[in-house]
Length: 163
Image (cartoon, rainbow, N blue to C red; front, side):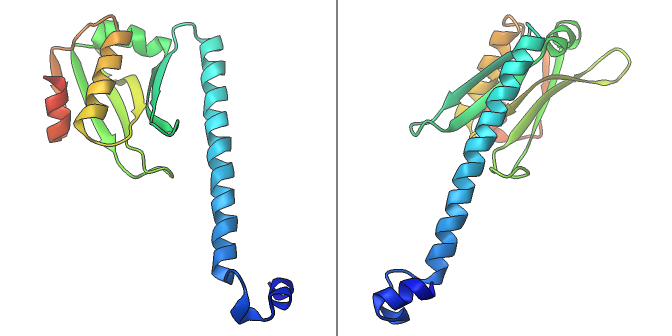
């Protein structure tokens, strides 16, 4: 900063403040991390598909080519849903990850009263379009087998999406 100040003719004539430099560096690190995270997620999905031919993943991007919604399930989830998918529970945890994307886990219970995971999703928001997309993709990957009962946390958008 002192070098830039010297070349500018003093601190008061500098084209930027120290705060601007810190913000620029932090922004660059954030962009690098997002790129690294997305590459890591992509690599995980590729490896998962190679290991499990019944692994299913689908995603949607927004107008700026950023991840909007992502849904996935593995082969075990498929088998469990066929056997125990009469009751579907789903709940969303919000703002618990670094990107503030709602995480939704679709669950059921097996004949031993153990929890079965039928799928997972990262959503853009907790609104009707995201929930509708999620349920459409969930049913699509399970051969349109609909559950008899859906248990939610009384979220209004979640209820409307299942109708």
